[in-house]
Amino acid sequence: MSIDIKAKLAKRIRSLRRKHKLTQEGLAELAGTDYKHIQKLEGKAPPAAQIDTLEKIAIAFGMNLSKFFDFNK
Image 1 (spheres, rainbow, N blue to C red):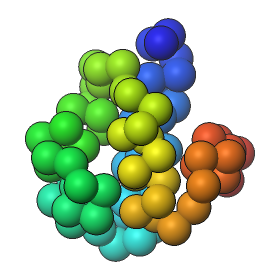
Image 2: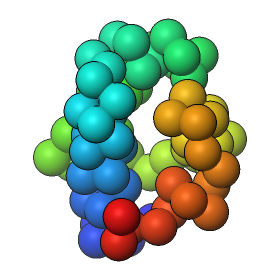
Image 3: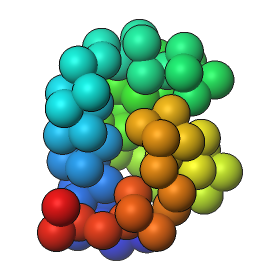
Image 4: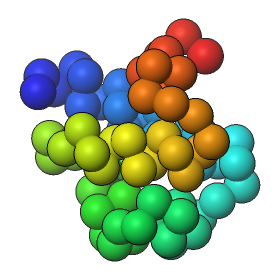
């Protein structure tokens, strides 16, 4: 996964989380993951994310992966 896409994903997750008025802990609970993982995904040097993790995050926001990956919104 390129650095550019990781940065875009970090920004997208943070933006959606704030839009939904969720803390990192709240999003982690909804997505069924550890909040430290959300913290890392939103960080300055995010790790590569597994597609199943991204799907869980998208579902937590009430969207499918197609909408989640629409970085223009």
